[in-house]
Image (tube, rainbow, N blue to C red; front, side, top):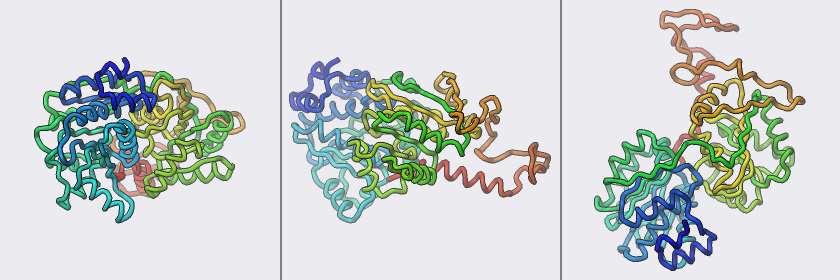
Length: 440
């Protein structure tokens, strides 16, 4: 379906033509007409399917016909990077319509806070914001949302994962009850349906998410011990000299730093990115990556969702993600918009049970490859450990004591006793969970 069939204004069609957008994606085909009719929407579609334009286009169309003095539309999203990306798309699509927008996402200096304050207290038509930063401004009592017509929650599942539920509800409490509300998510978990019931009125439901990697992604799985991973990554990259954009996902910030340093020692054009980096550094790196000045980015899950970088050739999962859905989002960085891409995952013996969950989730059993001969044999899939009981890293023994099978000095392992093993596992858990902290 062509965008010209939606009866959009000439200004919007001209902007779409300028941006080389001609054919609507399935989520756009279903969402745009219903949003134009004034319906609340709960939309579920996998990353890279065009969700942003699905809500931005009809909102711009409606605002071009009727807009109030003050903030007319509020778009909430989980990360700074996504806020900037949405704002860029709004700016492009509204270029000929004269509508204004501003992204509010935290970080930076006093002048940046002041610029956000002016945008929020003035007559900016569309505000794109992370919940925590917007709530900080609201507490100063100069943010007026009484003229709001449209409320959009993008990547709602991610916002809830990060812990923004309370912030979201406080912000919604500042909004007029008479409004059009849109909720977009990559998954339709029970918590999303609960949130939808609280904020949407008789919504139309659009569900295109199959929670599976795009068909254009070639997926390869290597069994690799932890000490083999760096050598395997170097070999994979060297085998694809024609690949111009590569993302490598690590589970912790420390691994990002170590792997980036090792690849830089090999004279590779690589930079690291995580929530430890300053916001200006992250923004500049993304610009350099998009413009192909940087070939390889090593990242935590800060880049797994919501970042619109086209033509990524290769995604490497240096570590298996903790959640099966995160695997889909990581892999979804490549093969966007019906293109082709390669995704390679390195599976250590400790991560086998995680990858088994991924296979169950996507309903597919993958072929497992061995590392190249010069790196030695990798772990065996059939020798996988069982999925741990209870919290990750903790062994639940008999509360009356007992013997834990295994070797080493801690053969006799009592249920809740403190040990160096528990402290080590606790630290590992903290490292693995560092990408779930609030990022605004």
